Length: 111
View 1 (tube, rainbow, N blue to C red):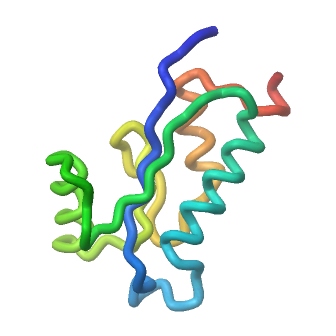
View 2: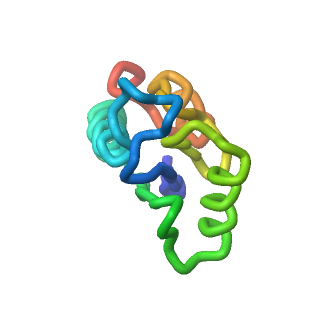
């Protein structure tokens, strides 16, 4: 079943979130998520981006969300799947997988 690759955005910063002291950095979480998702959904394309909340790309939507993370003191990293927040601070794979499956992704176990 062909489908459009979804976009997963991981918003974070080099500095670990003050409320997330013993957790991995946002960048480490991004790398871990990318590897875990590729293992769970092999041969199913998706786009994953890391966005530094203090230096967001030149994209109004991403800049606006980066401002929101800072202004609303969201725990980062904040993980979005197609614009929906699915994790903050210490994102749970299960929540991310459930959101992806709404878009037609099938895990290795389901195949």
